[in-house]
Image (cartoon, rainbow, N blue to C red):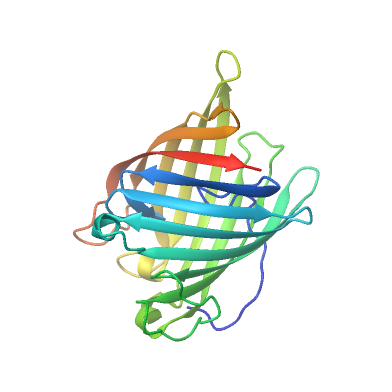
Length: 248
């Protein structure tokens, strides 16, 4: 998707399953649908990942999604490789990331411009963002821009996605809290039915983080509204699931 490779600043905690804890974190998310930035792209999904964050703020992540008929056949439908960097100031955090998305297990990370024989498509993306952690609602903004694509994914080459988010935690009894968040995303190109920049993801969500013997278990439920959904695609739906992670 891209024609240049620049490392930009992105939000610490760049994805729903991303982990901002130093050291290794392993785990998986399970959702009723495979959701991609406001679009429902697959059936029930199981998404394992492994993440390592160094003391210097540099991290790597490998994330896989099994969904729909591919999951029933034990075939990997997507695997993403990420390199990221974050730097925390007193009141805000800047970070940068590079992601290579491939459509089958084992596709080489360096192959950003050609479609190999063993996978359907390969897309590379950089992102930049900022999060204000000491401000009410902890607002954040991040921008994702494609920079290279395999031949089969050329329609994605110029795509861009901008996301703003914020949230608030309500303290419950004991050590429990209810986390609420709202994400609003704008996209162009393949994100919208007309290709123009427009709102494609309005996503309020509620989650309940729990911890058992060092294992974090977080059930969540949310609702997505996509006013730019393609004709025939769902423009509103419920997203529910649970994430289970262990850090060491």
